[in-house]
Length: 296
Ligand code: GDP
Image 1 (tube, rainbow, N blue to C red):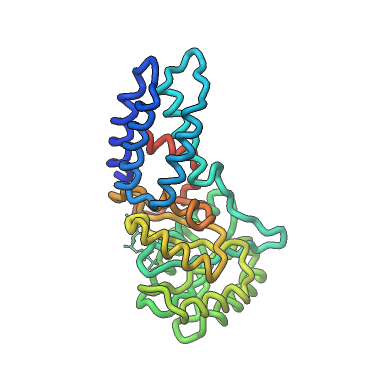
Image 2: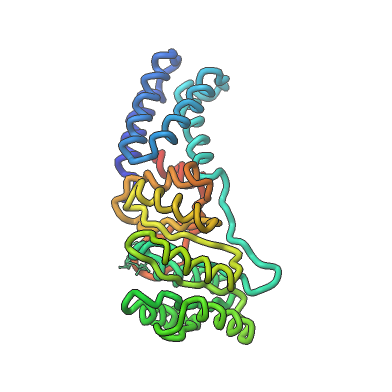
């Protein structure tokens, strides 16, 4: 399971603190040294860890201990709060256009889980009685169009495609008209991914962006790739102004670094997390719940 190593290490640190009636400065310093190592080992960005530890220490030193709490519990509470803040504080909701359709552009590298997440997002919207249109703009990856069609059929959502011989920008333009004509209140555009970020990919995304004027630009990143996921997010964000991140494969054995670093490094919130290959509704990302989960 994700975060397993981090959780057990933190539990270990806090186990030692929890019972103590009094905490010396040395106790706090020792605990923070261990938290720092645990976070680094979980592949959290170095600078993020440094800032995090500084913030927790500052508060821990001046913290008032309410009656029913032990000093150790106070420190744990501060860590919990700061972890939540690190991941954005509160849940960042999906934007909704007041002039439907709401357009969501899906971006990401090949294999990150873009097409799968597109279907999961559609399923989530269907649950709330929306009528999403899925748009197949990934014309390069063999079978991407077919994959989207199969997933669309599976969840009962229409898929707009013009095959693999039309430019994505033209497909996107036609899809917008199609959505308006057919009363789709959401348009989710599945774009092409590459193995690496390149100028051609970005240019194509910019063109699709231009004709669809999306309300959301969601980057799909694979949590399993750790800090590389954060680097990818930063590069896309520099070029495209992302509005949010979907973190996939959280069911896997990820150490958690991406979940804890993306917001702090890029300023871009994680809006959803995805688990599993089966098409289930995408789960909204709640920083406080994730912090509690990490603390175990
Ligand atoms: P794309 O190239 O970004 O469109 O990626 P795909 O949606 O085709 O996904 C690539 C592979 O990752 C497929 O085998 C998916 O079934 C798998 N996948 C996608 N999302 C998840 C996830 O959240 N968890 C797991 N375990 N696998 C996933």
